[in-house]
Amino acid sequence: MKLPSSSSQFTAGDRSAQPRQDIQAEHSTSLSSTTTGADSASLSISLSHPLLSASNSFDGSRPSQSPNQSVNLPSPPQTTHPPAANPYSYANPPFDTHRFLCTLEKTFPTPTARSLMRATRALLIDRIGRVRRDALAVKDIDNQAYLFRAALSELRTEITLRLRNESAAISTGLAALRRDVDALGNKMKADIDNMKHEIQMDVDNRKTESKTELKKQDIDIEEVLNKAIVTLGDLRTSMEEVKWNNMRRAVVTLGAFVIVTLIAVEFRPKPKPQPPPKPPAVEIKPPEVEGNGGAFT
Image (cartoon, rainbow, N blue to C red; front, side, top):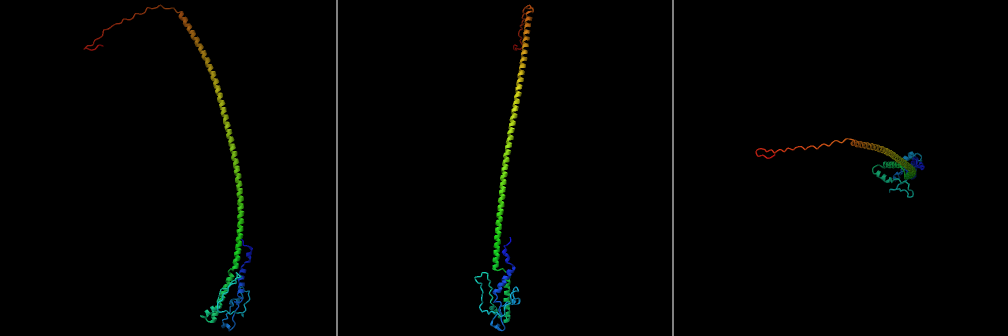
């Protein structure tokens, strides 16, 4: 995701130049103070940056501070606060040079303590300048937050558009699939109806053929039965005719035999009658008696 084009104005050079300008504006008076000659006993402390006088500026472009500008710091510590009207102003951390110098003079001589104080202040200013050069200010953070929110808004818009496009494409695909499914369902229904109709026609044709075959078989059976009945009638007629012929022949044969028998009986001579035979004589035998007083037998 590309950031908006306004991010091109916040480059590394701008971030590094902004702290330098702030340092020059805020420390134009405090960093240019020096002491002159023998007035060092009045605690007139030079607040000029020793490195700034050597390099003339942080980036080598600012002119050197005037050595005649000096600030007499009061004994109580002073704390600078940023103005309430400018929310992006930067306040230096509180550093009481007078108290620090007094604390150092308790241990070191005055020139040594003054040198240590100046070195400490120079080191502090150098670190503050480095922080301002390298770190991001509130304005930069706000700008980056604005750019981040703009990028998030653009990303949200792009994701929303992509989701809408994908949803529209999915809806179109679903509608096309639904139409295809409906068309396929209608086609399958038509094919099933056509298949049912064809199967019903085949079944009806088969039933008709079966009925025709059964009728034909019935007709053939009736023809065979009729032929058999006619044949049986003819055979019965022939049998009756043969029976009558045989009966007629038998009657004629019996009549002829009876007539011949009667004629033979009539013309046969009669024999003389013989006397009846005498009956045979019956012999009567007496009963036999067993000895020893036995019974009759």
